[in-house]
Image 1 (cartoon, rainbow, N blue to C red):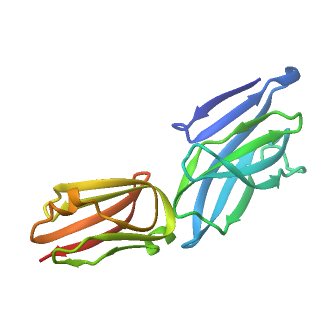
Image 2 (cartoon, rainbow, N blue to C red):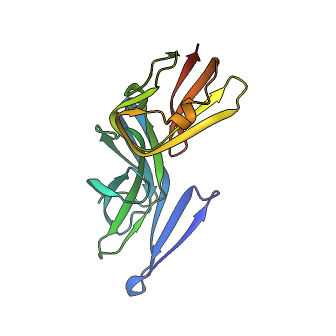
Image 3 (cartoon, one colour):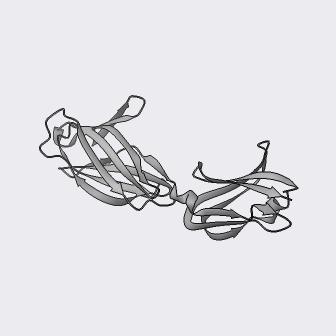
Length: 210
């Protein structure tokens, strides 16, 4: 059985494995990412009290629910009790939009548990998007993405911040046309088009209707 509690407002997670009458704590001190490039990031974490930890599995998800294994990292077998242990892994193939990461802790006795989930936005997503034409005169508006973007939402605002309309794609990929029920509302003026994924801003573009 694994019992868990959180400290520091939920930032740190402590797990106790009670199998066989043993209490085996693993303390995750930190878990975060930092950018390497627009399409890659470094995943970092720190632990202590790795009394019975065999290895860590880094898992990634594009929707925050379905996770896949990226890599397996062995625990520091000769760690001094109470010392801070540092790990890192480079993900060189970030998906467009949002990526979610978590750690699976595997104990030597076969029990496992998970860290909190963290997320990383890929700037490569915004580089793959374009909205055209930007100056309109009774023509359609097209949205194009060179890479698939899950849960993409397009919103159109006027310069006062009023939302004119929005549309949603479960996966935005290739060339799409702005629905007429939105484009027909665009009278002469200037507007801002914004694309988000999982609530994160990916791209914005000024549109001028003549």
